[in-house]
Length: 120
Image 1 (tube, rainbow, N blue to C red):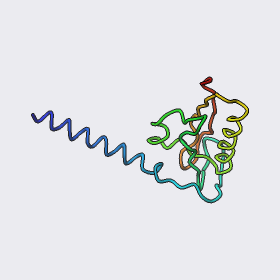
Image 2 (image 1 turned 120 degrees about the vertical axis):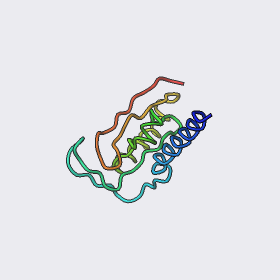
Image 3 (image 1 turned 120 degrees about the horizontal axis):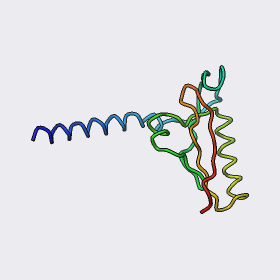
């Protein structure tokens, strides 16, 4: 009986922690112009933009990376370029689906990769 209660409390605590980690991405607003300092992997990103999790022909590769590890942020200009490129691909690559790999975290870090996943 005590073990079952412990498991329920543990599951509830884990769920609360996961929701808490995901909240910044759920309420993030892209605004202003981003600024970067330093180098890739050892830089700083101010006023980052959160790339959309998905669109008509793309999706971010991982819920965990996006919502829990905060790895979907990039410079404002890069974010706009990514979204516009996917719009262009809707016309030039109809039926194709793409995945967006990790970008940087909210404070800066590694740059992103875009990979095709085949056609629908």
